[in-house]
Image (cartoon, rainbow, N blue to C red; front, side, top):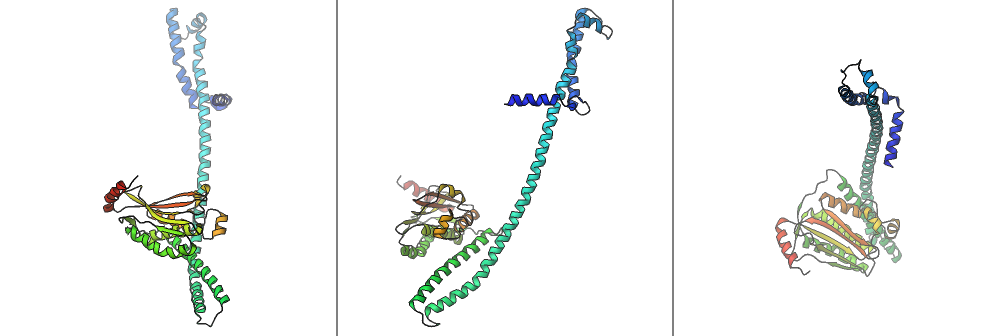
Length: 367
């Protein structure tokens, strides 16, 4: 308890020499001076009541007549001792705080050195990834060229078994190309000099383009893919190719984690209109566990190990989405339930001239 600790500290300070050393403890002198008025007033009053002339010679006579004056005479010593003990406690606390501050500064220096080392390692890793991806592009182009020549028969006739092997080669080649694109894109977004060139983006035009791009792949997998653009059109602020890349990553993720027979919808969320508009990608896929949600935007993270083994991927797609959103000073919202699907929303500012109309349209919508 607090009072026990306080009494213990006071008792320990009573045994310290510094509590009674005026050269090391000015609180002792302060307490002595603080207690002087008490005996001076008491003895002066005693002289007056006894009818004695004040003076040192009359003091023994006064003390003999009024022995209780001895209690007041020791007050300066008592106050000095108490203040000296309190001064020792204060000095001990200051020493303890000083030690803690020294330890804290030492830890801060250690953390600073570790942080600089991590930054350097992170920079080296990014440079390594950038160099590797650039070096991989050249042989990959050669592989692609020769595989296309083999498939077309320009290097001789091939049988059905060889053609199936070439199809496997092309699929893995496309996966490798996508990995390289993701790494290069992430590397560019990591650069401190990367700039975002804001412009007006037609939401209808962007969503229709994405619909045409993904519809064949969705039909091939047997996924119900629906795009629901705003009516009428709304313009948001951003760099169009980056926002397109972010939505591509979200739609690609949704396709990967949605089984045949599932559904994927791309729409808008006007709940924050007229200032901002949400671009929504929603699926009925496997969903994300709640304990994994805080980490899904970290690079090379993908739900958990079993998800990565089952579905593949680099774990960079959502990290790129987050980087693009951060570069736009936008927000990315995610809602997900395991076994029921996920909903990702990128919230962007609406162009000023569209704000009033969007607000009117929102009011007209049935609740």
